[in-house]
Image 1: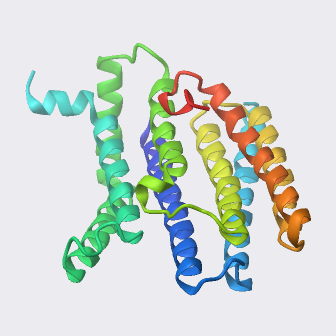
Image 2: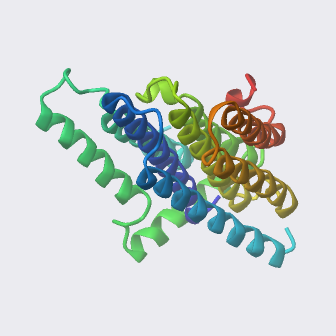
Length: 69
Length: 204
């Protein structure tokens, strides 16, 4: 395991924590405001975050294929 | 064995553990777990401290010579004491921590997701979490590109379901959301099948 793997894993932990924090913030705001539906901004934010994760995974898959993994 | 020798042999675990604790601290602070228990300014400093310490740990604060030195220490430690298992166990353990953070949102201050909108948000976070975890497993060479592509395809299906569910109302929306969540959970189950010894996967 080299330094890059450690960086990758720590980044994963940070990203996961950020996801949990994002969900907590949305749920708490909705409950505080008595809403049951997501706002357009909240939905767009969740979608952009997922698009970014999808793009990162696509890039990782492309790299792995190039390395025949 | 001196402390320094122990640290050299357990450098990876130590760094990773500190990172995990920092992530937990940031999440707990951001979710308001300490609100009311500590003065408001203390909560802010806790979050800031955790953030900057993690930023340093993941390399922002490392200059190149420090990175080389750390890499050398790790390489020396691994050569001196070759791991009894491959990197799988350590990566599995660390990704397990990530899964635990995701699956154990309640423990980190995420309220119970009740309304349709809250569960829809939870669905998006689950799909994103599955993709993030897969990227780490692939980069760590725990899984191959074929497995990663499989999860990516399942995540894409779940995402399409979530997008459609968001446009529907009533029972149709509930059914679409349920099927999308089932696909997302199947993707996570698939990942856990690749890491069956991970303690965080035993309950899946």
